[in-house]
Length: 119
Image (cartoon, rainbow, N blue to C red; front, side, top):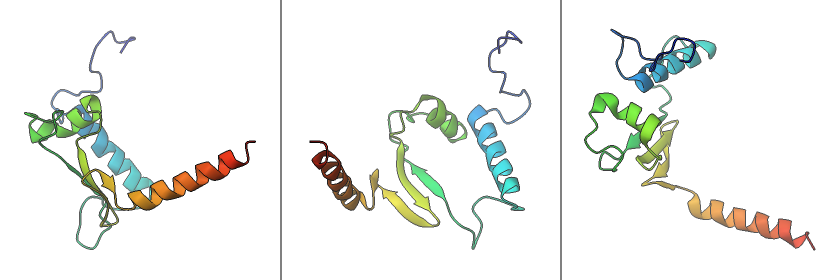
């Protein structure tokens, strides 16, 4: 940007207008290629890793679907992510990890064990 003395140098006129979506698509394609996959995306029988956004989150209100990824990447604090699935199984539901209680308990035990040896 400084060398070209221009803003929005990642945006390409005539290409996909949403910068985050264009960068995300390039990242997915590169990741698939480096993993030796011929295709990527949601396909029948394929591993399903995805997230669900809360369209009522203040950071997404009024944002057209074509710019949701831009809003999420460039202006959202992350609260708009409601659910996350990895390998087709939800690991986050309603903004809470499915094993949240067990994780918190193990963390508390680990911290107590660490501090017990501090004296």
